[in-house]
Image: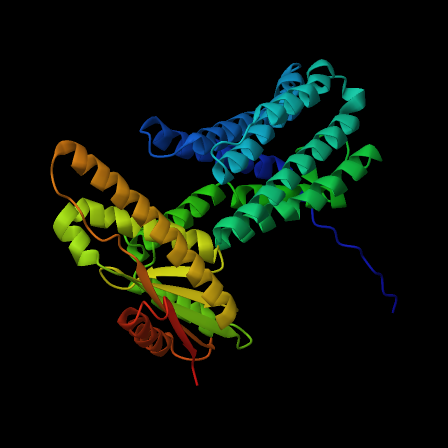
Length: 406
């Protein structure tokens, strides 16, 4: 009995896929542009929506050209695709940074679109496909870089998803460009195809459809982070509140290795006297000054917490007690200078007005304790609070009291 081997190939209906992609991009464009009209989203949504409308138009032109034979379709659709992709890339750049300059990007896109405007000869179909695929890969690569930077800067987990969705299409576009350059994709984008070029096109379309609403997901996470930030921040000073401390504690507990953690308790001296003599506005100004100074001194790796009315806690991961003491001295010194200058200005103004407004310039007492990230932060802060009262009890002998945790 004779056996025969048959090679089975699966043909793809690219016409349907291109129509679905075009409709998906047109819908995405409308969905993004509608909120822009009400002022709910920024420029990024207008760019993203407009870019998808333009690319959707270009994709539909390709379908119509293949099935109806519109002579001017390639000269309109291909340049539209280039401009649309540039607008989409600009949307991600503007989403990441509202002040991003897009003129260079759009100028480059306009220059790249020119050859596609003047070239419509069917004999050069494969060269146009190769050229447009390379351009698309380039814009997608720009988006990948912007999304990765955004994910790192704002800790947006969905930023990595967006970067992945666009990163996958880069090699797909490059692969299709190579096949087109080698004239291995036929003479039509649409219709039934069973070659590798068709599968690359199908992969591109699939991921393009997947990512049309990706910036809305990014916006949702950014809004959630902003809401959490408001919930975890003190409205007056911008320092973390106690809810913020819980998140910091969880983050430190999740670290793979145990490290040092130093806590500093800051308490404003003569704060009640300041409020009583100058009013609560002066007290609020003093707290903001202390918070600003502390933020600047501890840097981005440290965490400032408003623990009570006039009490602040500085949490310093991977900072030893001697380094923390230097930071504390800097905070106390700068705060004293600011408060002394304010008291002098107030006294001078009061003297000119013929009123008595003399008050002691507030200082700050600081307690410092060193522990490790594996311990309870609440216990570390409690010990720092005790150290602070040692400092407050005898400021003449030691402006800052500190000791190491056992």
